[in-house]
Length: 480
Image 1 (tube, rainbow, N blue to C red):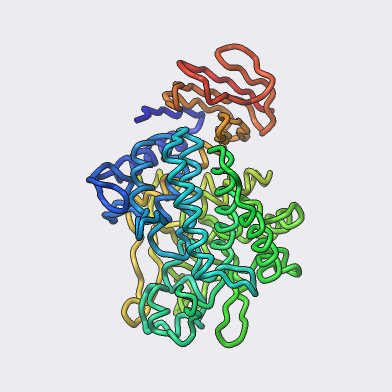
Image 2: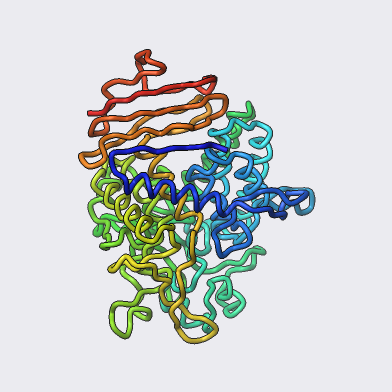
C-alpha cells in the first residue's frame, strides 16, 4: 500500500485528496467471485454496495487504483471475469463490459504484471469476438446496447421508458419488449446504439493489439479492420455536423430516431479513445454545455423527470456524476481546454470538502447531494445519492495523478505532462510507490510547459522516468 501525502498551496485540495484516499480504502473488502478461488481483498463499488461491478471495477483501476492498490486492483479485475466452457470472458452487464479492457491495460502499464497481461488478452479477445457475433450490427457498423454506466431507464428517452413497465433498469426492457429486440444472433439486441459504448469498443480493439505487441504475439488484422468500421459507423450515425458534436444514441423504435442529447461520458471517450479527429475535438469542446455543479451526465434532461417544478432531474439525465466529471476533465486537459478542466476539478473539490465524502450524484444547479428521479416498480420517485462512491473518489485521483501531476503510464515508464494554474501553483506528492521506485514529485509554476525536469537533482532532456527505475527518486518540475 502507498502512504501518500499531497501538499499544495490550496488546503481544500489537500483535504479533498485525503478524503478520496479514505473513500477508496474504506471500500476495500474481502470478496470471492469470477476467477477468484477464495475471498481476497477487492475494491467494492461504494459504501452501499457489497460487490464490484464490471464497469466500476474497470473505471476505478483505470483512474489510478492500480497505482495505489495493485494487488486489490488485480483481484477486482479477476472477480468480474467468467470461465465458461473453458473460455475466459468479461462478465457483468453486457453492453459496456468491454470497458474492462481499459482497466486491465492500465493495471499492466502501472504494475508490469505480464502473467496477468496474458490472461487479460485472452479475456479481451474472447469477449470482442463473443459480443461481435451477438451484438454487432454490420449495416450500421455499431454495437447495440445501452450506454456506459446508463443502467437506469432515466438515461433514455420516452421511447424506452414508456414500454419498460415502470421498472428502473434498462436491463428489464428486452424481456418486456422481445418483439422489438434483434436477438436472432443469440444476443440481447436492444435496438439502441450509443456513443460511449461504441467508443469503448473502438478502444478495446486497439488495446487487444497493444497487448499482443507487448506479449510478442501477432496482432489480429481483424481488429484494425473493426476499428475502421467502427470509426465510420460512429461518424455516419452519430456525428452532428450542424451542431459540432456527437449525438448520444440512435434507436430503431418508431423509425430511426437520433437522440441529440449531450452524453458526458460519450464525448469524453470520443476524445480520450481517439475517435474524434482534431476538427471534431475543437468543435466538441466549443459546444459542450455544463451546469453550475459540473458537466451533467446527459443534457438536456428528459422532460418526464423535470416536472413539476423544473428543479428536478432524472437520476441518469441532468444530474452530475463525478466519475463522468473525472473523464471529461481529463479529456479537456489532454485536449488543451484548461478552463474546462479547472471548472470540473474545483467543483468536485468543493463538494468533497463540504460533504467530507465523494457522493454518487449531485444536483446540477445547487450542487447538493441528490439522487435524481426515476421509475421504481411503476411511478417516478426521487432516489437517494449513495455515500462514498468509489468511482467518484477515484475520479478525483485521476485528475490529480494524470492531469495535475501529468503522469501518463506506458510499458516503457512514466511520461510527465503536468498542469498547474494561477490558483494552484505548487504541488508535492510524496510516498508514491511505483514498481521498484519510491517517488517524491514536486511541481511549481503556472502553466503546462515543462521548463526544467530533474531526477535526483540531475537535469533530464525529456520529462520521462523509465520503468527500470528503482530506489528513492526525487523529481522536480518547473512549469511556465
